Length: 534
Image (cartoon, rainbow, N blue to C red; front, side, top):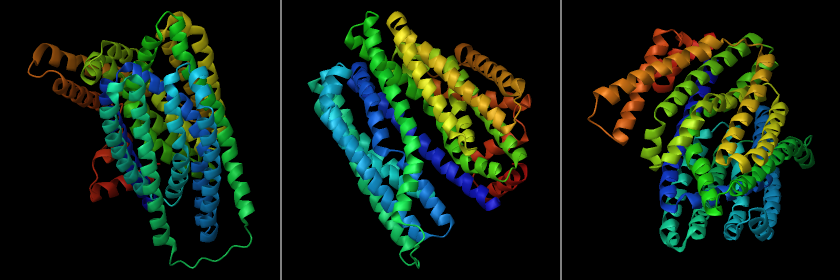
């Protein structure tokens, strides 16, 4: 138990550190790009991203889950032969699906850009994006292998390297192409990402070949005549096809939504350029800032899936309830704190990061939604671990469909505020349905006062005290330095108030401490504590 918990914690810590670094660098790079390229170019790029996401879904075709499941199951039975053959089948499968997606996007780029997106400047970028689909699909397949063999540090390190390549390539291309206008700026963004994807393919494939030689070269591999390649392919399709179909439906609806928003803004009276600019500010500038801290929750949530599955398999429902309660409590405490900081410091955050009053306003408007957005990933992870992934997929499809309907009805009448209303409505709908299902599956009883009311009281108190300190007492710093000190002050006071009011109990304190203290003796103490209490 201790060894498994230690591995879980170390993997979670590795994924969280990687996710935070990647998102931090991504947000910083986003700031640089938006300041260099402008809001209109970011809006055009967001428009492309909706279509690109759909074709990535088609190209990858659920292969990450497929390769993870097949390889993990085979190695769990010590059947190396089936594991290696499964990877060959998976690579062949994603090569076929990604080439089909490439042909579709490249062939119909002109129709998609001119007719569906309504902007001829997107055609060249769409054709460049088509070239990246095979590398993305193959890397997704190889990433599933590293997850299956539980060597996530390898893929984490490669992701950091690839992010560096993307930043360097995009920065250089922006420098060269930006003077030629918005279309060239968008091509620079797309081409920089394309370079990174091809480098990613080379790096990930090299790591896979090296890992396979290192761990399987000297092992006696006996042929398993009971399982044929046809059986493996059939099982792979059974895993990936349902996921792909539901993901394509949701991605297709999301793409329609992305297409409709700028058109709705134009129907509201805005010019096409200003519609793209407003959409770019909200979607490519504000939302990445709002979602950045969620890396803390999403990384740990993904690793909860096997833990929950084991509880269901062993019918250990008491442990399942404890896991669900603790994760929900910590997620809410964290998310409510982030929400309070974003509301309280929205003007300073928008000014320091983007030097934009409009960005500050949208940060403040969306910040109250943060607790609902953040806990959704934790709740979804518990449902997937409990075998209710189909329910989660259906909820996500209903979410996307509702969003499309609301965008059609509200954006032409209310402009960008109509889109914000649709975000609120769909996020509340999605999280409410998922949370209701999670509570019924786990049997957990929420404690609203302890999990919601007390954290709200504590963050309000923390922001009031910090406001008194920085607005009426301290006038030494300004700009970025004051923002950082202000956030740090709010966090410290918030944690103190949570502790004094006993909103954070012994269990929660152990988890928080374990996130920051990594000495061997403390880690052993943490492992023993978790083993006894989860």
